[in-house]
Length: 137
Image (tube, rainbow, N blue to C red; front, side, top):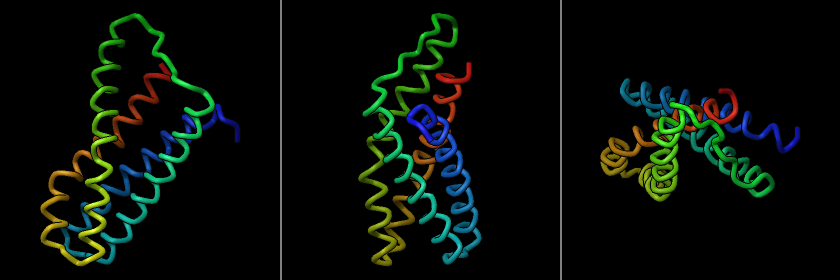
């Protein structure tokens, strides 16, 4: 695997994370804490792997500009800007979610997850959209 393969790996990790988050949500709604915990640990691990791969890629490749000058350009930035902002902002909240779950403060965990799960899902899915627009259009 070379550096040029990392954007595709990152998109795969984001896709996997979105699916794991969905599985975690469904299992939580069904009251299956054991399965929910497994899905969410896997989603967290996938996100950590993504972050490591992302940093390695951009440390080597630098910034990748969006070169198209057509109608997709404003759409690309409309997806990219909230993706980047929410990706950065969500990190301490995910840490807090894990903290509350680890310490079995499930009431706090659930209240925080009500707000953070949709953000995490948006960041995962919009990451795939950014990849598709940047590398596949």
